[in-house]
Length: 276
Ligand SMILES: Cc1cc2nc3c(=O)[nH]c(=O)nc-3n(C[C@H](O)[C@H](O)[C@H](O)COP(=O)(O)O)c2cc1C
Image 1 (cartoon, rainbow, N blue to C red):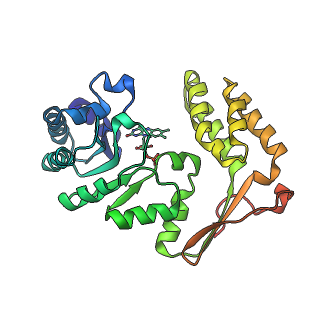
Image 2: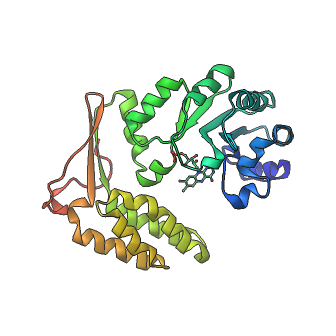
């Protein structure tokens, strides 16, 4: 881990985030990811070695336990991370064994925030700007991390920032165009053996923007190449033109999604990109 920190620091990134949260079987069976939560001594050694190896930002992303949550152990663990010089931690408050089942227990984010002084970022089940602000206020955490909803609606950050700052604004989003361009980005920036898996993975989430998202994803999943996936997307929006664009309005401290008439045409709608 120390060698990895040195190599990464040479690349000049913003910081190094140690993964103590991944519950994937292939990862935990090697003693990595969330498995580290079961061994406070080993985790301490890792963070100590990383801290010696880099002067840059060093953070940890973690679950609140492996099998189940134990508040005393969890607090000992985050205190250990703080004592070893971690700059901030991100907490996804579900035990790793639960994967995404049940709901994230944000009381544990609040508890960590009260017991340690380094910044705490909360993560888990944020699916709207209102929810992001509520969880931040209720838990007192210093920041929010968004996972699944950020893949489905990357514009959630703009909406949340505007809602938080009280800015009245409008945002037009070309869902169709973003779908096509992201698949294109996967094609041009990743090696060919990853096209199928990454195209499918992105589409799992992004298809949820479509009214018949399940059908759209089922169609995409049959395809192995990016152009064929893009073709499935094109066909869908040809049949469902009124869904190609979304428009959000932030007013009176709330986010509204403008309902576009069912039989309208894409040409009637707002242009793509942010309208401020
Ligand atoms: C597509 C995808 C990839 C992820 N990759 C990582 C990862 O590399 N490292 C990590 O710590 N968490 C990863 N996560 C987990 C998220 O960071 C987050 O903890 C989890 O999704 C819960 O947040 P959510 O409820 O906002 O989705 C990933 C999640 C998704 C959906």
